Length: 295
Image (tube, rainbow, N blue to C red; front, side, top):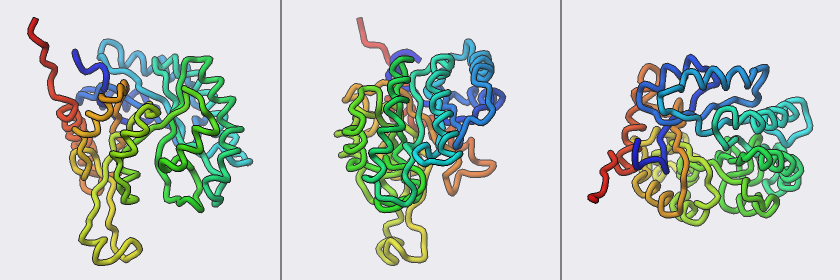
């Protein structure tokens, strides 16, 4: 992959070496290993060794590891989420990566600003632990159905919240796992925020959205018909050539990993067909095949 080491194209995968072995022949260049809510009883040392064996001599690398739960509450699930973050921070170097990603968490059904003090209490020691391991923390910009006033999972919705987060934790290894989808479905233009916040973006999810403007205009935001759909890149409304150009222009070096299993059309038996198309599309948006300059 000469000439494209700055931005690689991959996919999200479950923590299963056998699954990873099946998807890498499609041409993905990276994998992002993702846990839901907790690492559970997973032996991370063993998993890292199994993944390394599968990836050996393929050129594929692990871009990130992540856990998506709510670590800010004061209950058993939150304690387990905090334990999982800490374990992944220690394990990340064994996977050959320097990014641990996930949700910030949230004080449930409280306004976003009321979660910031707790966010700092939980993630300040985790960020310090991460710095000692050469690891960066990247928070996804997914609202999980929440709003500024209420929600269950995450506060890293958009620029106003990011400003508060990075004021609470003004640390160089604390940043974002960004994707345009979550902005589009709120009718926000992702490009201005990308240009402003690119320096804080450590990892990118390859997920897009389609807005059915005719449905929205006829029925309004709270009408009976769905008007916003999560899409695999190549099937949505975003200009990924522009997105990748902006990432490059601001010096981003990292991975765009496709977050599959959301597309309303390329689903079921067509899931991997859609993901492979998305991968090929993103590679074209990246600039196609590398061409060496004349000497």
